[in-house]
Image (cartoon, rainbow, N blue to C red):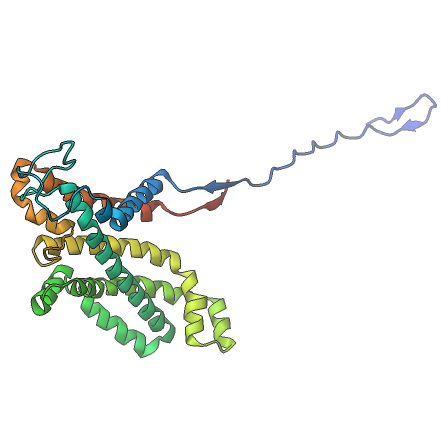
Length: 300
């Protein structure tokens, strides 16, 4: 390539190559916050409504739940009886509100007992390991092999039906399932470095289980709690439908379906509405635990 000469006769430098384009600054990753989904809000609204009815239901019911207020049986909707009347002429709305407390109260008590016991035993078994873990796991495997309704029927046939027995029976029935879920979580957590560091510091068993392990497995345990609650509601309602659950003069939704079953052929509201109440509660809880994941940040 020939050199270029400037006007003074000197040799001029060759023109510099064009500079590479400076890339535009790359924007920082944007964090998208995923809020509670619509289905989670719907589930929360359904569950919240029934919990509120369990608390306030008997005090806001239009009639006494045991009083015969209609001369007709299995009547339909009217301005006087919003959900009709049952097989004796009692107000069905009042009966459902009356039964809400037993349905949700018994199921909640049994689920809390099952989940708390199963999680505590799982933490101990996973932390201890060895023969203690093996003995506890095999014993609960034997218990979980018994069908839930068969076990409940044996308990009721042996000891009779009472509120306390129903709670204890449901708790024993579903405690092994809660144990298996919690143990699988605890086995993974107890192998983490922060748990090993707590052991090396000489921390006690109670401190490690409650401070280091439990907080790091609580969300899956709570999700399992919701699932156990649904199972317990269905179990207790099934027992009441078989006349082995809540006994008169108390009532829950399962017993309301049973006592009005003769109106099924007529499509009576007295048998349809309690069944819909059971369905709505279980659907609401499932929507809540399936979709309530909280705020989650994700990079785009």
